[in-house]
Image 1 (cartoon, rainbow, N blue to C red):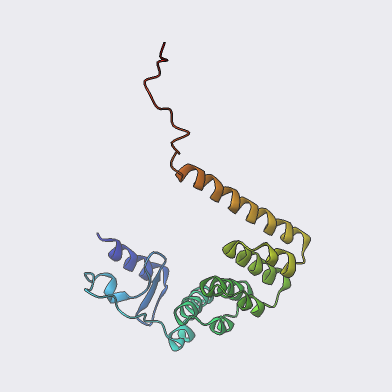
Image 2: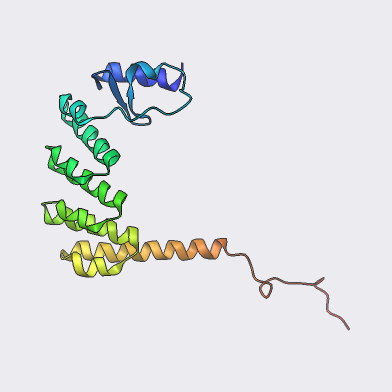
Length: 179
């Protein structure tokens, strides 16, 4: 049994099959019939449309559909179609990262979630000024600074590990001293 046929059965069992499309976490949205078909020579177009997302009744699946549609359209305004506020905030944060645009975070109503979005952008861009200027909650500000410090320490360690030894650090010769 192939991964796709297992995925198709999972879609049918879980009921996340809607309008001939199915969401499989590893595969994304796909035509249910195509899940059993052999791979196509060229990838098919994204089957998501605003109309399709509107027809989904399950709130979690609908939010996932709108999020995927927003990312495909590269349009944070699409996230406003999501009725579940935490899911809407996750959608906006994902688009802010995708566009690498901190202004997208401003679309989030909740100050705490907006500041979490800013934190993500600060880490993504390695920019402490975002922590200082945009984050007002003391705990989030400290977390922002800590995450930036951790990121820089990890990069330093990686650079040291990946850096080839210089000739002055390498011992040359037989190890015997001449008389």
